[in-house]
Amino acid sequence: MNKKTKSKRHRVFRENVTAYLFLSPTLIFYTVFTGIPLLMTIFILSFSDFSLLKPIEFIGLTNFRQLFDDPDFRTVMLNTLKFVLIIAPVHIIGGLILAIAVNSIKSRFFQGVYRILFYFPLVVTTSAIVIVWGYLYDYEFGVFNWLCGALGMNRINWLGDSKWSLLAIAIFSAWKFIGNAFLYYFIGLQNIPDVYMEAAKVDGATKWQSLIKIQIPMLTPTIFFVVVTTLINCFQMFDETYFLTKGGPGVSSQTVAMHIYRKGFQEYHFGYASTLGLILFVIVLIITIFMFKYQNRWVTYDTE
Amino acid sequence: MEHKNKKRLFLNYRKNEKKFQFILNIILISFGILFLMPFFWAFATSLRLPKDSFDLPPSFFPTEWRWGNYKHIFKSFDFLQFFWNSTKISFLIVGVGTVFTTMAAFAIAKLNFKGKNFIFLYIISGLLIPFQSYAIAQFLVMNKLSLIDTHLALILPYLANPFGVFLITQNMKGIPDSYIDAAIIDGCSTFRVYWNVVIPMCIPTIIVVCFMKFIEQWNNFFAPLIYINSEKKYTLTMGMQSLKGFRSAGSLAYILAGVMISLIVPTLVYGFGQKFLTKGISLSGLKS
Image 1 (tube, chains in turn brown, yellow):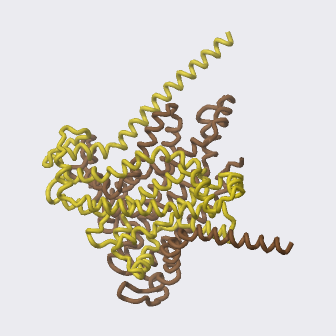
Image 2 (cartoon, each protein chain N blue to C red):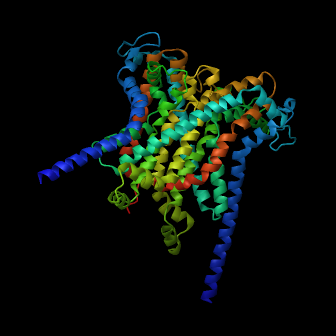
Image 3 (cartoon, rainbow over the protein chains, first blue to last red):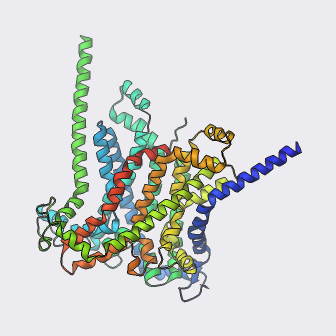
């Protein structure tokens, strides 16, 4: 008996060692380049003043006080919020509509074509394709303004006018990234067992009824996933604004992520930039916790 | 009589369905073409005579075929160096990183160990943390390790792949334990179980993870922007930014030719990977 428990303990120990050996590469790289930097930001850097040449000096809440003196901080936060409010619904709802439409197509061939088409912009390099979009938005020679002219409207200074630059970036973002939400929804819809849909059809349900009563409820776990990831991605938006407007004119289209880059890597206020990073992290954390907390109100998990 | 009525109803339904399919197809095709417009325009303009680049109305289909523009930009721009840098970095991350990712997923899905829930949550939380929130701190770490302005700075952080761990773990959890028990009874070591039993059953998901990682890294801009200074080490994403410099030298057609060239690799990879996209994600049963 004693021998048996001993050998069992030995086996458990060996399994633990094996498991951690398997985990170790991921854990090491993750901890060194994400875990530790994040903890450093939260507990040390946000309350410090430093740069590459200046050693870390603890300055308490000074960085947080500086937030109120930074005239750009408010604008940047508002911009980010605006982007989230415009872009997230476009992705979340637009992607869903697209997915439902493509899923209703009977022909497998066309389904495949649409799937490939709508995901394609996601694949192409942002820094390259944005050059194309820059010219599409060009004031004098751009296709968008040529269209405006053809429709009898005045030319719009898409990227140079703070009234329009947010919209211009939002259009680009929708074009570039809607395929992501679309693909997840589409896969979710494809995975709903045919029996449910057949049963509804036999019972005389219309397309609309089976959409509302079966497909959407069964898709809620996917919708939840898409909503969470889209919100997080919107909060860390960087590439689009950096390339299209450089955050301008002025800071009128700058996002939090870009502000961190500017303060940290262009103006070398490392401490203050870390504080901005902490704020970005806290916002995302609150949203995530909130989403997970209230998910059981509307997300139905399939119990097999 | 009744039978006839039913038949008519059925035929009516079939006819309506056909109409519905037709209209939906028209809408989706128009939408798809709208999606591709920027590419059409860029391609058509890249083949125009450089001095006609800005002519309006814009052309969406090539009216002339000046492939010389492509030759010109290829000669006057260091594409090959940038291509090589991006390819090297992306392939190293995908190759090495995916092995690490499957190992971690295997441990979480199929092995028993202390602190499993914590470890899983710890790795998965990487999905939710914005990179910019700890970019400064990571920069300090890189500086401590003397990795600034090296390609290793662009590779090492991405060898851990939380999203990949998540997807592959979900897939592996679906593999019945009986397969694994059978292999163990046959005398397989844990490593053999991982490599010869579990991995072959997850290939579609692994391909999806490789694909997404490749695209993500091929397009990564923020990390090279903060870590790379010397132009020789630029990735293609950064190189594209200096392509804009050609604007002053004259011609949009050349720049767009450069853009089109830069799209070749992702397009090829997509062409290969897209088949697996739906299958691989389905297998992992995306349920958060």
